Amino acid sequence: MISVITVISTVGVAAGVMALIVALAINNGFRQQLQSHLLGATSHVNLLEVERGHGIDNWRAFLEKFRRVPRVVAMAPALYGQMMISGPIQAKGAVLKGIDPAAELKVADLLRSIKKGALDDLKDDEGRPGIIIGQRLADELGLRLGAVVTVVSPQGELTPFGPTPSYRRFRVVAIFDSGFFDFDALWTFTTLKAAQQTLSLPDVINTVEFKLDDLYQAEAMAKEIEKIAGKRFATTTWMEQNRALLHALKMERLVTIVTIGLIELVAALNILISLVMMVMEKHRDIAILMSMGMRSEQIRKIFVLQGTIIGVAGTAIGLMLGYGLSWLGDRYRWIRLDSDIYGLSFVPFQARAWDGAWVAAAAVLVSFLATIYPARSATRITPTEVLRYE
Image 1: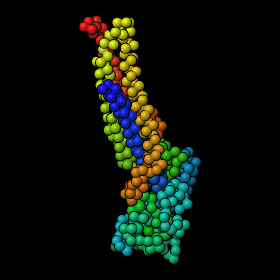
Image 2: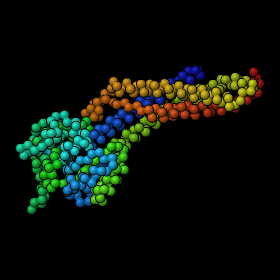
Image 3: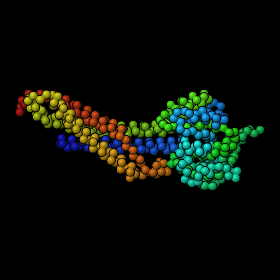
């Protein structure tokens, strides 16, 4: 029975380590994929005007202030506005972003996911400026490449009768499919000039987007950019814009560690039970060894070593299985997903060496702690009491 419990304990440790490695690999894979998609669609730092609210005039000279800022590898002007876009089927609210196409590709990769049409077609044609829309928005409005849409700006123009909405017709020159619902269903792109005319604005922008050489330095660089820009400007980073999603992934990782970590506790309990039963079965042998002069420390080390060996063996097996399954799962894409719902066609596995290191250390530590009570119990045996009736 003790041998059976020992095997079960080893299997339990291996199962816990394997499950934790695989679960962390899935969490890391999802986080990496989502982060790469999000950063491909947005910039690392955005600079916005918050006081005047009329836009940044003379913006070309304004951009020159940031040319020599450390870590800034690219920047692009942008003009955002809330619009109502009308198609053959229905109308829907959307975000219109005026861009400089060449600069936009340097700070974000969203427009690299164009499936129909081309970015080069984003120019005026017979009085109708071009517009790029997402695939989901095109499906909802019943639009296709080359279709003409009406964009309504609620900001409009100021007339003697008050502000009135302005209308402008665009031609769909490209359709992109990033795999993210919010971008594909809400975002549209046009040139800066067309966006300014639609919003009834002069040659101004309301956002400057920055790309950094190290995305994790976004918060520090945002403060530096604010100092250069002045008091009437504020910055946002990619972490602030996606705080809810990143927090959800972090919470999911924590819950995964706690939940699957309970398997390790069960395995440690099995180690504890097997060692206690061994102490009870071997109490006569322990008494004889102690009567022959073996010290308590030597007796204690026997049981500590046995429990630790179980933990080390189970951990080694679990690591090999965990990393092996993660590699196979990612290579052969075992778990398929609906890309229309999740934005990914399969579950990505990304097993990291650091995760294996701390998981292994935790498993061995738990196994070691499970040996303390049985080892101390073995040293409390009194040889004279045990051998009196033998």
